[in-house]
Length: 95
Figure 1 (cartoon, rainbow, N blue to C red):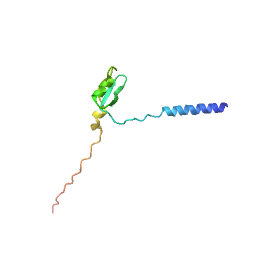
Figure 2: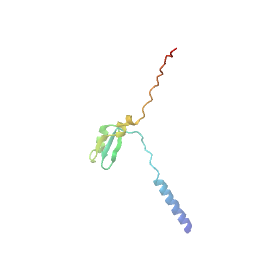
Figure 3: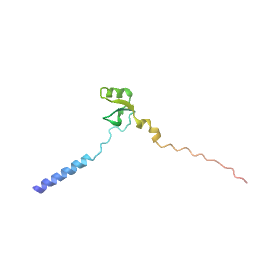
Figure 4: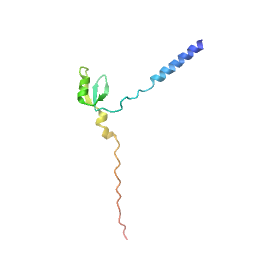
């Protein structure tokens, strides 16, 4: 009886520890251009707004402000450059 209680306790502890270590997948992987920002949200904040007006409506009365999402602003700089087409130069051989 004592061994079965210990086994259940160990199994329960392992299950809880395993469940706590699982990261939540983002339900919406899209980076929205506007973020609610403030001390309680960290940086860049809660970036879940398609328009500035949506963001303003959400932050109203919450001691937060709206700012642009830096991941969207600087995406072009972070993406690798497209390879330029290679131009072949033909040389004339001297005879």
